[in-house]
Amino acid sequence: MDPIRNPYAPGAGQRPPELAGRDEQLAAFDVVLERVAKGRPERSLVLTGLRGVGKTVLLNALRGAAVRKGWGTGKLEARPGQGLRRPLSSALHQAVRELGHRDEESVDHVLGVIKSFAHRDAGTAAKLKDQWSPGIDVAAVRGRADSGDIEIDLVELFTDLGGLAADVGKGIGIFIDEMQDLGPDDVSALCAACHELSQSGLPVIVVGAGLPHLPAVLSASKSYSERLFRYQRIDRLARDAADRALEAPAADEEAAFEPDALAAMYDATGGYPYFIQAYGKAVWDLAPRSPITTADVAVAAPEAESELAVGFFGSRYERATPGERDYLMAMADVAVDQDDAEGDAVLSADVAARLGKKPQSLSPARDSLLKKGLVYSGERGRIAFTVPHFGRYLRERG
Image (cartoon, rainbow, N blue to C red; front, top):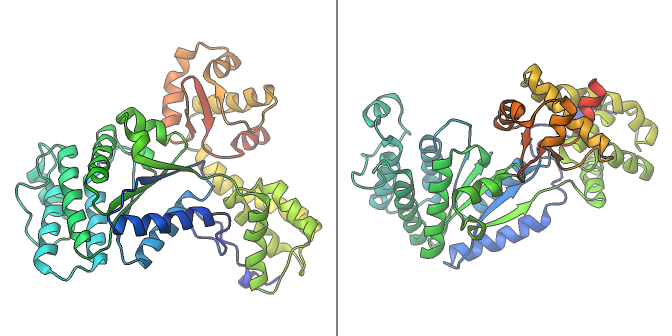
């Protein structure tokens, strides 16, 4: 089949040709946008799930929905060790520009507050001004969002942004990817700001995406965070949605899958969106003609697995030290011992026993893997891979 017409798109955060299985989330978010813009009470939103389930794709789709409603939006990706002020200031600068408020004086005031927020880094304000600017041409507003306390400053900043959006009957959406990587002080400040917004009814919402333990990160920061956010777990696709993700793009290119081929594809991918795109691309390139058959899937499987081994699994495995790799392998072995090769989590104590070591001696390796985003802990004493099928990859790798 013509590789130039291949519709499938395996890429990090790259929107697939058919965003299947997310209609419910998109429809619910449209309601949230309308309610917030009208001053109705609504909670901010947090998407959680393993890597490869399409959180970033959905986050971008939700942002697109906000843009179509005339909202101002900004997006940032949290990174370990990076403060919130710089990336958030850039994102909010874009949001104000998108909002299209016609009163230049009001806009300049809010942009000045953003600039003040960006420049105020406790103890290093002067140096920060010399090193970095958010690209805002107006003067910084003194005495607003510049106290140096991130919690106070964020509340003041969001309040001014909300007032600007309310003037035009729209809203502002702040979209944060990899939200679990925010520092503790920034998480606490973000929760406090969202709490203030929920009480004031201002049209500003935060939409975050992160790994499954993100709710625990937020809860550890502020006990009321469980009531601040609406949590949505993003998981693998059901069979009908997975079939649609394959069939709809193929039909647009005047091609099709045999029913048995769709079943074989679901068995191979487990319904994970990233895997569906990787297998779809490989099968399309290697199939001689339409309709695609189970034999075509079998021929293409090694190519798809090779691509995943390098680009999806291998890139993460290479980040681990030898000691950390031993820990990962022990996790995979423990899951098999429990007849749960793709289970959600294993006991840290069982991993230690598998390695013949005391749990305390493995804490450095475990903590490092947590920081690298290779594993997560959804509950005390348990550990799981952030990447689906990672245990299988490790066992096949030997």
